Every structure is written in structure tokens, then in C-alpha cells.
Image (cartoon, rainbow, N blue to C red; front, side, top):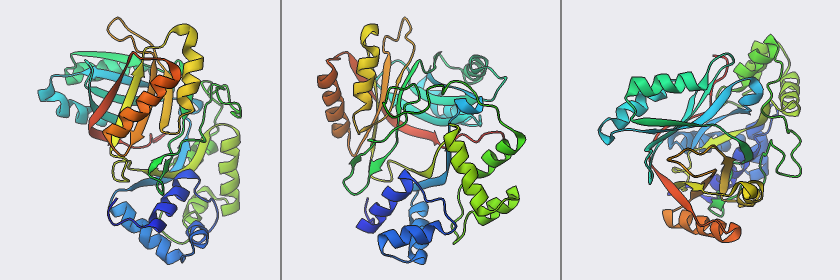
Length: 336
């Protein structure tokens, strides 16, 4: 990334992994980098202006909050693709929406709906309203990995530490990720606060704590409790991977025999360049079971990583679908 020095890169490594939940987080980050709090805020302002840093907030587990979520694939006439994508973006539960090339489906998005609503009915309505030629709802069957982390210093994927709620990673504590927890009205109020983008001021948590009528220490205790209950995965920054130098985004789709599902899924999840790995349903026109998100600084890098996975697993029937246009990427806003 032109104009980004080593301090910027180290700073991005810190905030995307675990943003410090303390009264003066920017000062603590500055101390670890050997710079002042003011310089941290100045650098963050520049990185936000360049859209390298999208947001700093809590990352919640959608399903533990009672929301239903799924990947959706749709096919459109290329002439209406953009118009359809922008209409789909208006749904508050759509967090990611990409045009992808390489298969019969050219629009891929994720959507979440609150308790009591139907994913299928929502998608059917979207398909009808946008004139989709075909669509497939592809919910998660097995959840092997989510661990978005980029080593900005080395310029390579660094998703070594990741979340595998189905228990496919030995140190995973939560195995009932698909079971909603009971939330109090106060829990929901706290979720609404913690999901908002963090202010760039010396003490960014003070106003949040005041609105919740707790101390800042009480707010940090709430966040820790949410992590223990499996509601919140972490509090961190989300980077715009393209602006951060990871210009290629390839979705690997793999045809894996049923008897090898777990073995292959775990092997894919172990690769540090894979940020997400799931098993999803197949259809008569879609034989691919496993999905692995690969990010690299170039398409050649993605192809190399896919080749490494293929060699390690012996799975040779696969495609890598590259995004040609990002229509939306954000965090789902809950209980709004």
C-alpha cells in the first residue's frame, strides 16, 4: 500500500487482532509502538480516510443472538446485475455482497434475518423483486473456520488463530454455536452500543458507558461476559482488504466426498491464508460442498494457495471464483 510505513503496518496488525478494551486504548497502542497517542489518532484518521480501516467495533456471533444467516447465490442478466445488487444492499441483514466470475451464479451475498423471520422467504422476495434468473440458499452445514487476520508487515494471510464453533479446532470452547442464547433487554441495549463504530477520541468508551449507566470498567466486564457466553467473538478493527494490499479475493469451492468432509475441512482451515471455511449444501447444478475464502496480494497468489490446498487434500475438482465488484461489506447491525 503506497504511503503506508512500517509503523502503520504494525498498528494495523494490533487493532485487527484484539483492540485494547481500556480507558485510553490509543495511548496503550501508542506505548506499544513507541509513538504518542496523538500520532496514533492521526495515523488512524489517515487510514480511515483511505478506507483501509472500515470500522472498529464488537464482532458478534449472529446465530447466538437468535438471527438466521446464509450465503445466497443468484444469477442475473449482466445488464441488470448492478441495479439488482444495489437493491439487495438495502436489506439491513446483508453484510457482504460481491459480483463473482467463474460459475453460473454471478452474485453472491450473505444475509441475516432476526428471530421469527424466514431466510427462505426473504431470499425468495429478493429474487422476485430483482428479477433473478435463479437463486440458491446455501446455509452452513459444518462450520470449520472464521479467522480474518492479515499480517500487514509480511503481507500475507495470518489466520492462525481462528474460531471454529462446531469444535473442529481443539481449543474451541463453544460447540453449540447454532443455539440462540437468552438475551435480556439490557443485553440487547449493550449489543446496540458495542456494535457501533468507535470514536477517534482519547477516551472513546466513556460516552458509551455513560449511555448504559455503567462505569467504563463495568462496560469492559460486560464485553468479557459476552465473550464467555459466546455472544461476542472479539472487539477489533475490520480492514478493507483491497485497500490494505490484499487485492485478490478468491472463493474456493471444492467437491469433497461425504466421508472426507471433516478431514478435508480441518486441513483447509489450517491454512493461514484461508479466512473462512464451511460445508454447504449441494444442488443438481452445484456439486461443490466446501467453501474456503482465500485472500492474497494477487490472483496468482490465490491460485498458488488453492494449489497448495489441493495438493494437501487430494481434492482436484474445484473452482476459484474471483470477485469482480464489491457492492457491500459491513458488519450486520443487530436489533435496529
